Length: 133
Image 1 (cartoon, rainbow, N blue to C red):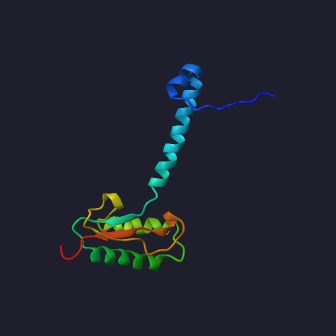
Image 2: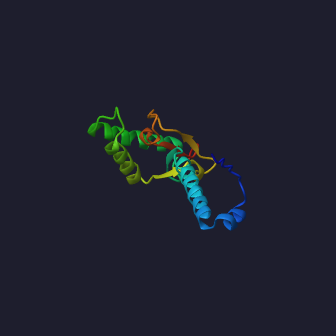
Image 3: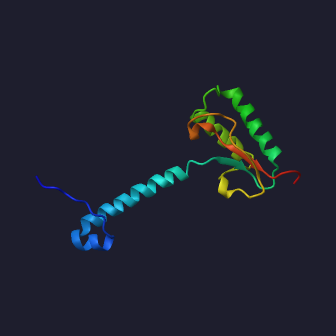
C-alpha cells in the first residue's frame, strides 16, 4: 500500500510541479471563499434613511407605513407581500435602504422591531438625525 503525503507549497512551485490543474483548483477555492464572505457581509442590518429627516420623523413614517399595511395583511409573519409593501411605502416617502456603513456617523439608529431568526424576515431598522433639522 502506498502512503500519500500532502505538502503545502507556494503557488509558483505548484505551478511548475503540477501545471494548470493546481492553479485552477486554487482559483476555485478562492472564488468559493470569496463568495461565502460576500454573503456573510451582505447580511448586516439595513436601515431606512432620508437625509434631512430626524430620527423621530423616520420612526413615525415607518409606523405610518406599518399601520397602512395592517389594514391590508396579517403581519404575524412577515412574508414577501408585507416586505414589498413596506419597501414601496417607505420609498414613496423618499427613504432609501442603506447599510450601517453608509449612514452618517452622527445618525441615530434603531434596529428592526420585528423579531425573527432570519435576517430577511426581520424587516429593516430606521435611522435619522438627532434633534431638529
